[in-house]
Amino acid sequence: MNLTSEELKLMADPWWRLSNLYTIVTDEGAEIRFSPNPEQGELYRSLWYRTLILKARQLGFTTFIDLMALDQCLFNANFTAVVIADSLENATKIFRNKVAKPYERLPRLIRDIAPVGKQTASEIVFSNGATISVTTSARSGTTNFLHVSEMGKIARKYPEKAREIVTGSFESVPKSGMIIVESTAEGRAGWFHDAVMDAHRRQTSGTKPTMLDWRMLFFPWWTKPDYALESDGT
Image (cartoon, rainbow, N blue to C red; front, side, top):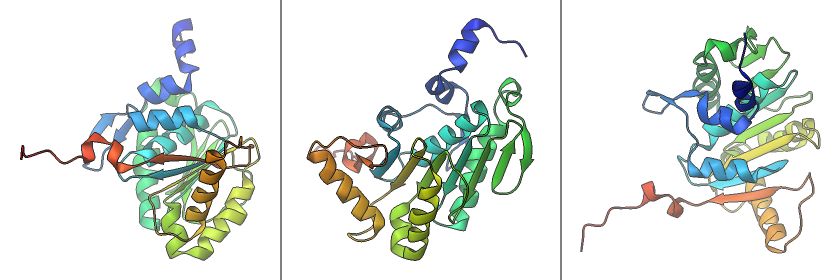
């Protein structure tokens, strides 16, 4: 496998890889080349060691975050990425549509960088020692990249599981690692609500976050043109 100097330069840029290499399966079952939307781009530019995302639905954050996790596994030896979903059904869909299929549809040249060493229904172990898994529960061991999807729902429906994630999964990520927690709003109680409010108060006070402080990003539905109703002219 030989790459030109220009190709090597491009491949060294994670944003370029995320914008050009991956194919995803839409909710309608269509396969398309992934291209980050404006909200995903804003997330990428605003990433922090601990990032909270309060979002509207259907902005594609789960897809984008999990492609980031997969990409980091392919290009970093011994990297560990874990995705926690709110249900077994969603964990299965996330692994199949946002991890396994995007990897399988990569050009052979890219897959040769990190071939699959072992694969199960919820985990891929690559030949470079990197691992990506999708689960519904906390996991021990060191995790470099942790994504918790729909934490608001988890905290509301399964508060014990939320506590397990906070005390177990979060603690498995070193200070220099990355945790991304995203969710739609789910009431005025629970860990996600409290964490968002704490982060909002810190940010509005102008306090600079430490590596262990949460940075909150808010993506409301009314800023998305697709959610606007067409005027009937009256």
